[in-house]
Image (cartoon, rainbow over the protein chains, first blue to last red):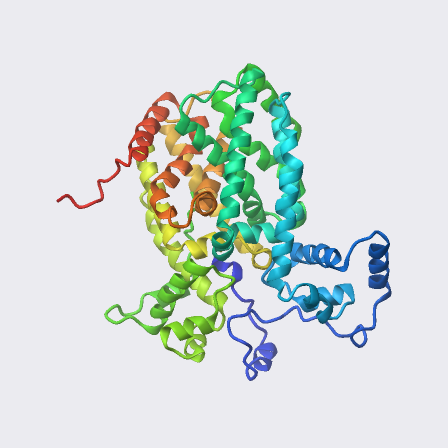
Length: 267
Length: 239
């Protein structure tokens, strides 16, 4: 957390105004209170109405719409500052409409997480084919990374809050198990295709996997301490290339050539 | 290497209270760390904390007006302890010493795990403080770089390694140090994690592997053998 969460210095008037009604303890003050200027509740803004109409026509349910726009908001604010009221406002729904589908904001967050997990499971594994080379491996990692960016608010939370880590421990262990199988088999394929020498020592092989996995999962957290969120797609390639660094000791000449090629291209 | 050397002087003064009796502030911090380690930052509530200490929430908010302030205070404590580790970086650096430094750091990360894993977990918090995050980061990088240059000086880096790869490797080393504890909570059961700390230190050291010279790899192999056979018990009292 360090200085990251340090409350901003209050301006004198603000501080004075905040003295009496002690807020419910343990929660950050809602500095992002939405102005109620948009007329009384229930009066729908034209834009929001159109979005919902379009969604209806496309066959998107209210539930899906809630998940999609909650994800959008969380990608900007993070899970801690995310409020059902803000979400309701942005969809021109009443908070009751939302809580009908999701009683607590945690339920929305969990639904977004499940969507992310399903997407990762469905779309990426087919990319590891017998034709695998270093460039394809890079592309595979890259596809996974860009999917994670679409869910950045929720994934950083699930990868970084002890409560979430403990609750989802089983899911995570299954994911890592699957990741290990996938990566180990791609090492084998790369060996077969002449891009890599086998990693003889099983312990070093495991360490190599652990390192690649850690980089591929937490690069976003690291990137966000340095770059604004909208730069993630730009810096992504650098981190993905970093994850390949662990393979250098085992690359053959043609493997090295491809690696250098990638590095030169993303520079 | 996550060298969180930056500590605010004000906080430091507050930490150095008279030692004989545990101050309320200290008591709050200790219990908070226990709670955050068990449940995470997001579910941590000041009222739960107050109840578990038999205090009123007002007692707590007198010292820390928001739960985020408690988190910051704990982070500062962590930085303080970490600073001591980093100071033992000398020109004598070899793989074993680096492993031991990593090991101390991993143990520290584990002690403060609830706070450490969360440090970059919330977008809002990160956004609010990106500037400080960047400064912090630059400092860590300076130290990770120093590690690389000391290793090079002492013949542990492969001569053919390019500058670019060295640059990438020190970022890798840093990321492994910072996030391998998160990895552990995903790869192992929560009960297992404590027994994996030596391995996690090895994992962070392994980030350097692609750049190591033969001498470096030999020392790494030696450490690996000791860690994987659980033969690293020098710190247990001899009976």
